Length: 236
Image 1 (cartoon, rainbow, N blue to C red):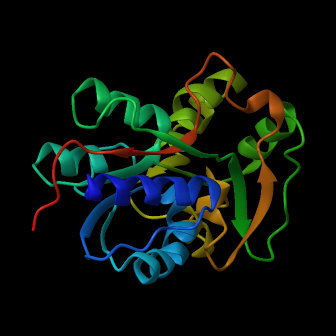
Image 2: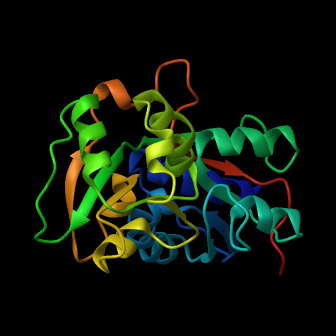
């Protein structure tokens, strides 16, 4: 029961910035986290460890995809975790497979998809769907992630804009690596990823979020970040 209290304090701490309770005995808490909240999480790790005396053992990876560090792949090959922090609907999929405890989720944040260019480069107009379409057609290279935001960009947004064929050959999925880093190196003119993942990257300018008409509709699965408890005990 004490271990569960630690995990709940961790999840609520990110959601509501509540004070974490200090416990008499230290525990090792294994966390798997995707990119959307990594910067905020890393800032809070030393606070959590100091106030609780517990040690966080962290594994980073995307919420989906086929890379070896993707969270579903890690779990499938037997890696264990006490807490998962990742995009909401990817957690729902894991719950269906029995990889996480149903009902243990804490909604942390809704993270909008943003557009980035190399630092100092002209910022395109993205104020409307037509403006985004024009910017995409004008760009020579476009990059998007292999996680939730990239899946939406490649399978929904391009189709909604009617430019699926035009994007073939110049829009590419970036596995594992932050899209902002690809843009900063000049390997893509436009980069699409959650703004929370773009902000920590040096060498880019964030143009802004996608316009309202290109955000996920209410009937779509939300691009929210959630924390859930894994049913598997942490390895000692």
